[in-house]
Amino acid sequence: QVQLVESGGGSVQAGGSLRLSCAASKLTICMAWFRQAPGKEREGVAFIQYGIGREAYSDSVKGRFTISQDTAQNTLYLEMNSVKPEDAAMYYCAAGLRNFDVACDANRDRLDFSYWGQGTQVTVSS
Image 1 (cartoon, rainbow, N blue to C red):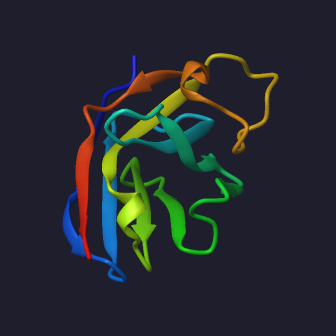
Image 2 (cartoon, rainbow, N blue to C red):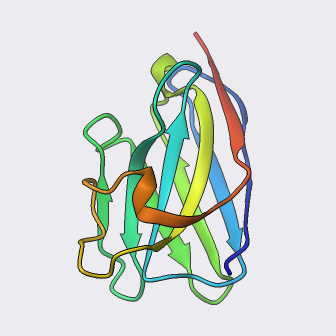
């Protein structure tokens, strides 16, 4: 079992920055940030592979968001820059790929992960 607790959400102006954190009981081989806006599917936005730190992003956030991890603190981060109104959503930390034969990249969806946090809300004002 992996426990995940997100924090750092809040209100940000369009064009601003926000940093989300996910405290994990342990880091897994692949970890990710997903988001879900009202009425929309939960979508993966950033992925990172433990150890080598290889990152992957959805097209919607590439160049604006950065995922990172502190292996000493078992913490996952999402640095959000140049935030847009369409970035408003509940953001979830995910861990534990169900299938080790797949890549830790932006092709993964919510069904690929076993563990989830409770989410942290991000609102964007224009």
